[in-house]
Length: 403
Image (cartoon, rainbow, N blue to C red; front, top):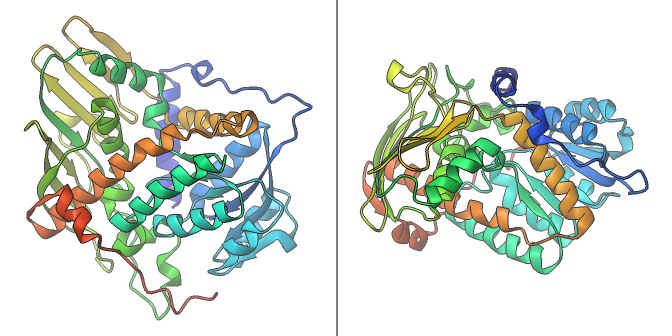
């Protein structure tokens, strides 16, 4: 996890060098406004990192934490000034946290757990801030769709932490694409990334405890959903939002090239999606570095039209090149977008805005990622309708874990 966190911060800092932080200015919470009480579930690297962003916002206070590993819960709880009595652990520690004195839950655990944890939080009338992806299979995605609608009905905020849609540069590129800047769309190419040299994938043990920490779960299909789902979904989501539609079929192939393969995830994937009008979209996610022809590398999409070309990127340059709506663009700032999400979460809670339109938008990209994964793993052509009819659930064996 340390490598991943350093890489994320490096990308964020690279973006800051090109895009002023003022673009991501946060709302200053009025002093008379009581802070939103948070419970953090997941005290690994990203959970630790994002908890500090919430804390520096000024509109939140953490009152409870939970992690499967008690030492992690106590460590992060201590950093946040939380008594040990409200540092919960074990597989069901999330239940004790949700029952504590909190207003909202921040979920930073392997995505397999999101649907169940989100439902428990809504049952307790909590707001939700969830990492991506929102689910790892079709049943989980459809469940999250129901929970998002339920959150709106019950006046609860549910936010999924996607960075690319909140970046001003990517937002402008998306607006111009939607306004017809490309002419007729001809082809899309996008790239993902399987963690550089690969996230560590140690041998399995008698208990799966070692698989649910330090991003090891990225290598296990039932916990992380495969690399195209838990990582490449960033760029898939950006393309889906830019076009306002999702592909209806896909064909592909996948393989694993990690130095030692103990999990069943594929770290190298190639997929060709097809939209209902026949437009092709080629996506690849590989292990390691890219060639010079894709210098921006991971999490970048090139959309080629009859009048212009556009690029959407997580931390490379985004732009519209040529045509009547040319936009020279700029370099997105991922960390700034996380801060924007946190501030929006606070504003929505304090202002009672529970429309959850942004969360609803991620359903399409989640389905797109799962469609690509299944087509690639099967080395076959598959339609989205077929996939939904299958409704196949992914379920890890967690029976040996401490409750």
